[in-house]
Length: 125
Image 1: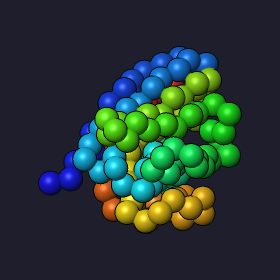
Image 2: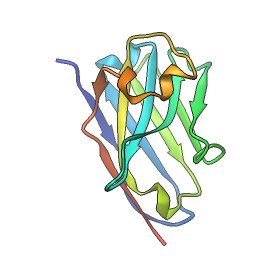
Image 3: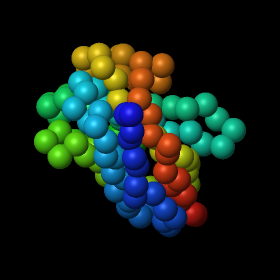
């Protein structure tokens, strides 16, 4: 059974940093991503990365603050989050897709077949 397991969430003050990790057998798939869902809002794209890590995409709201990376050999994906703000508070999900990475397609939640259960990130002001 395919499983993705996130870790690294928690409570942090505004301006602080967290690093999320995602481990699982699907980490060898062509496209990996992080998406998030705040209370009362729809799930939204955060960042995506191609298999070899050569291509990445970011939501405008996190560009310059978040960095996505992956270690395909060890099947781990990361999201380094710096300068966190209260509006970053959400459940963060790791996701994987079988299709080759593209900037446009990787931003669409429906493109992802495999999902983790999510990890809560809370940023206090």
